[in-house]
Amino acid sequence: MAATKTYLTGIQTSGMPHLGNYIGAIRPALEAAREHDSMYFLADYHALNSVRDPAKLRHDVRSVAATWLACGLDPERTVLYRQSSVPEVFELATVLGAVTAKGLMNRAHAYKAARDRNAEAGVDDLDAGVNMGLFNYPVLMAADILVMEADIVPVGRDQRQHIEYTADIAGSFNHLYGAAYAFPVPEGEFPEGESSLLPGTDGRKMSKSYDNHIPLFLPENKLKKLVRRIPTDSTPVEDPKDPDTSAVFQLLEHFADADRTAAVRKRLEAGGMGWGELKNELFDVLNGLFGPMRERYDALMEPDSELDAVLEDGAERARARAKATMAKVRAATGIA
Ligand code: ADP
Ligand code: TRP
Image 1 (tube, helix red, strand yellow):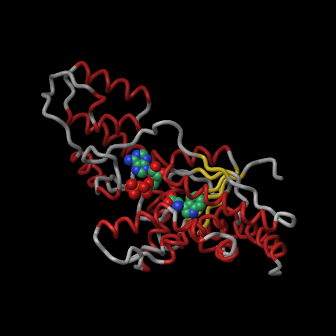
Image 2: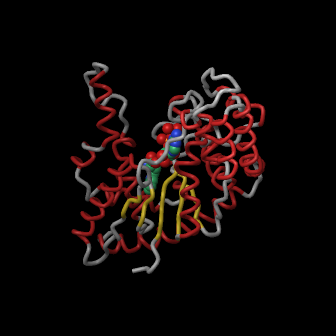
Image 3: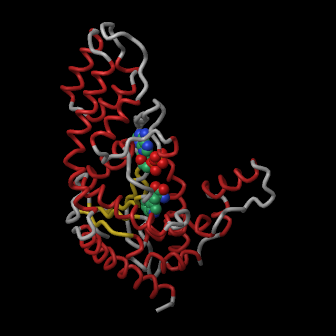
């Protein structure tokens, strides 16, 4: 057994990440990557289940990879790769399919939710609109994890069942073939406590599905416009204000350093600072933090940037690991 644990996670490739994704997923993952052996991959074959536009799929994968690099991911330390660059993932998914009960998939949350939606809409065929990619999603995700012999999988709480399924599926394989080869059984790592959710431009949780999100790398004028749109009440400039009920202040708190946040808090509580000025302050903080990253992002998105070479290098390292696992799996199962 390796002494150091390997951290692995899959990144959805659905468009440019927003400030909420940065706080909830990207920043913690970058911190973890500084401390652990880590592998992060772009889950492009998972995206294929729902994205039908080839140009969009291609663009989104590059865009998400460029975002993580621009935010500071060090590709020397962390293996960054496209899922589709590692065909062993799909070979292992076939092997795992042979040891996975269909009933387990019937109980998967995403699949059940799709059936419930059909039931609610009065559709007779509860499987209407469900493709095999959605149904098999947990098996492919198990393959993503097990092919790299990952130990720890940092994910959002909504992914808990997927990690349990992966452990289940690894257990089935190990039960049958463990004398020859056994997968390390991975553990999920979930955010602790009530992780603070970043509000969006309408004050609700920032989310792509609410269309209230602020993408990470916007041109200055667009960023300014979105910040202006965040709702505030009509308290006059001179009056004292409660910073903790303001979405603008909550955003500021996540991105400004402690001194700056404390100074603004004091001024709001004392009165004399208007919401407009607070918004200018937030714009300034966001632009200062993400401006340089945006330049890096734009450079990486150029057609001949080093982005593709970085992903190629990651793919090579990931594949070497996946090949070694598959050799053991093939031998254990009698396929070799
Ligand atoms: P969206 O709601 O925009 O579709 P996702 O569900 O794809 O975002 O979230 C991807 C990751 O970003 C998850 O780890 C999630 O916890 C984090 N995240 C998303 N929105 C927020 C938010 N408003 N505040 C904090 N973290 C968030
Ligand atoms: N299902 C994960 C999500 O929706 C993404 C993902 C795909 C993943 N394969 C993975 C995460 C393997 C961790 C490990 O966020």
